Image (cartoon, rainbow, N blue to C red; front, top):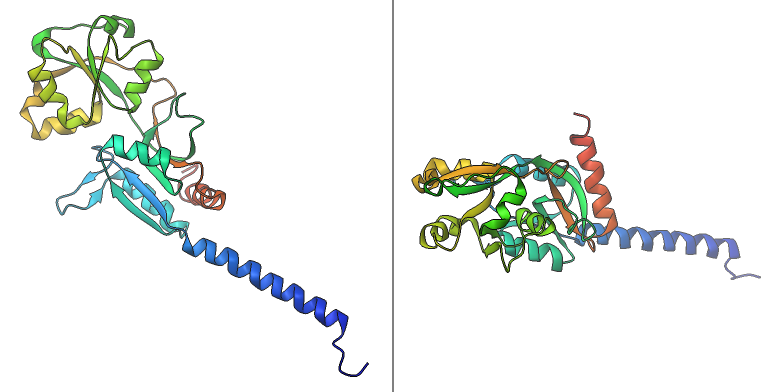
Length: 249
């Protein structure tokens, strides 16, 4: 009939409209999402350079992967406890450099590795403490940084906050506590690289000596990890970007 619009034209127009709507939805979704990336100052992995800029080998890896994936992001640094809580609570958040363990395994998406680490028990040299195996430390009071890898590692191996562990808020309080609470505290567990770096600028660190390195076996990797509510397409793009830049190289 004159003036009628052909049915096939209507179908074709509808499909084109649906395609355009879908395209714009996904385009808007991709461009509107900003990833919140949080880290801590953790020499020699990530630190402030002489100009006050966040730098280090892990920072370089993360920025390269995010840039190659064309993901919009905001990068900040905080003390570890704030960083870790942000990862647990905020659905747009990823964190580096974080160790992987049983307690954390199912909590986050472990996207790509950024480095390796070692940690040890340290004691004041004046205490003459000797440890042969991990169980030897059960008779001592040990300081750990709240919610960091070593804190959770020791809890997994039978250490409790009631008897063996003294939980502190940050690395900066380590020497203060060891010096002021000598009669209440015997050991502290710290990243070896962190102690080595701090020893360059703080003579007080020379009062500490390593007495036993943690046997981390396969759990000595540091990761870029994300809250499980970070969109799947972001995780997929990050994995593909990392594989393209670093895998098998």
